[in-house]
Structures are given as structure tokens and as C-alpha cells.
Image (cartoon, rainbow, N blue to C red; front, side, top):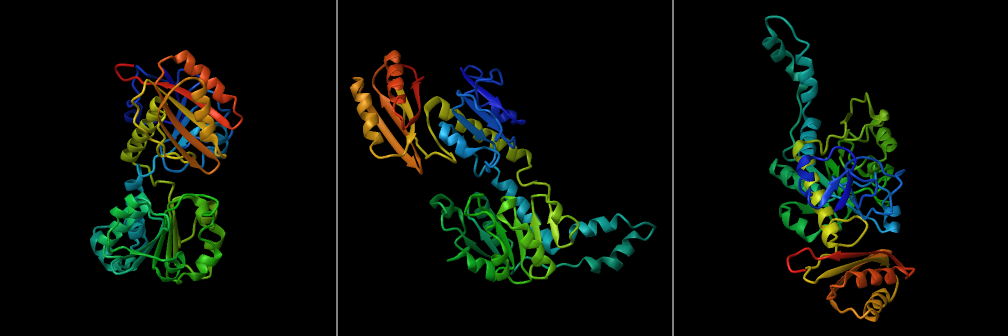
Length: 394
């Protein structure tokens, strides 16, 4: 029985993926898995039992990823599960940036009398706007969300240019051939009428849009940030807006500095706030954690490599180790010295750590547990698990 701890309200459709015969939810203070949304875990004392954490969402800034990696805790997210929700909000914000729809709707509510229709017709010119068709949209980051925004913006008649030096092959296939690929990020900053940013927050993306980048933009450009607050330098944006070097800024991250500015639209972090997105994220998070706990499979991890291998042997060893020379040789030797045959083996590294799946022919669980203890004696091995194949016949 796997023990799972949840933080926040996880959609029932996700929890239903964890069968009651195999999983207990919030019944122990020694969980093997954690499911959460936005709860901050930086001050959380992780029990030794925790093997994996799955966040029902894309960002993992609320999780101490580096510390988890050192402990051999695999952190997962759900990229793409909320992509459509964010995409729709970005498209809506693009429309709101050129048509004063909100101001117009609020103004109509102030009217009174028998001739409301005539009053509205007579004064509607104060809410005239412009159109998106024919304008140039620059998209920085062509992941799941950026790719969707690119395709829909093109269908609205916009000229779309995207920049992402790391776009995946799978995502590239989904992007319309009519979306132009920028050779460098400066092309996006200097040529576009609208710029929207869709990149994860990392050391090299902190303040990706700052003073220098804003200086490259046309004074009529409007900027959108639905990624993370820290991607854009708020102080630099305010200076650019005040000096009329930037026409507008829309963000999904509330900041007191940005309030009560007619050139700024601030939303209360609504990007993934749809019923569908919450369900999709919960399902993906539960499914990912389930496969990891039951089979040792790693997919959609932010701190360990993707490692998947068919499981046909009686038992499987999963090994997290520091990515130093000859570790695979040492692991193989220790297994061989125990008199156990390896049926299949897969090893992948990611930065300072590596992950190994080793399927073995032995059905002697006591012997395998002794082997696991022997592996743990190696100072560069962080965590070892012994997983029994639950398929019929073992």
C-alpha cells in the first residue's frame, strides 16, 4: 500500500486514478508520494519515506527542487495540462489590449433614463479601438502554451514570429508552417507590435525582459507576461511606461506597483483557473506519480532524466546516484557479485545526478533487499528501491 499526502484541493478525477486497493490518501505522516498545487514546501520537513512529488501545474517554484534532488526525491510537473486555459486567457488579453471592452461595459452601467440606447450610440466613439488583424505578435517560448498561442493568433490574422532555441520536435510539429521562426530574441523585441513570454523561470530567464530589452521595443509595443512574475523586470516596465517607451503591459501576477495604472492590466493569476485545467493537471500528476511508484518510471520530471523501460522481469531495482565516472560499472559489479543476473538495464544522467533501472531475474526478495543495502553503502548512491512486478505470474 502506497501512502499519498495531498496539499491543496486536488480534483477528485485525479485522485480516482489512485486505486483504493493500492493507495491510501492522507492516512500517514510517512508518505511515499506527495500531490499538490500551489502549497509552498520550502519550509516543509520531508520525511525519509518521500520518493516523489507531483505538482498539478507547470511551475515548481513552490517546491525546493534542488534540496529534493539531493535527497533523491523526484519532482514532477504537468506541462501542457493547463496549456489551453492559459492560451485562451492570452488571446482574450490580446483582444482586451486593443479594444476597451472592460471600460465600455463599466461605463454602460452608469447610464440611466428612457433613452439609454441613444446615449450609448452617441458616446460610443470614446471606446473605439484597433484590430489585431495584420499586427505582428512575437512569442518568446514555443512550448505547449506558446505553440497554441502562435497557431490561434495566426488564425486571427496576425503575423506571428516565435523564438525558442530549445523547441522540442513534438511541439515543432504542432506549430503552423506560417509561423515565422526568429533567429534571435532581439528580432522579436525590435520588430513586434505585441510580445508575449512563455518560458519557465530559471536562472537564465530571471528578468529576461529588462531595461535593455525594453529599449529595443517600439514605443507602440504591448507586452504580456503569463509565465512568472520574475521573468519581467517590473521596475523597468514602469519606467518604460512612464516615459512612453512602452504602450501597455498585461500580467497575470498581482503587484502593488502595477495597480491603478491605465496602461497596465493586472489579473489575479487566472491562467490555469478553469475547471478543465484543474482536472487535467490532477489526472496527469496522479498518473505520473502512480507510474513512478509502481514501476520506477520517470516522465515529466524537472530534476531527473526521463527513464522508461518495459518491465518483464520479476523484480526491478531503481537507483539514484551522483553522476560521476564509472558508476554504472560499479552498480553492475555489485549486482553481479551478489550472483544476480541483469535481464535489462537503462541508465540516464541529468546534470549532477543519474537514474538507473535494472531488471533482474531473481525472485528472492530477501536477497534483493540485501543487494539494495550493499548498493546503499556506495557514497555516491543516494537512493535504491526494490520493486516487485505485480503482473500475473510473478
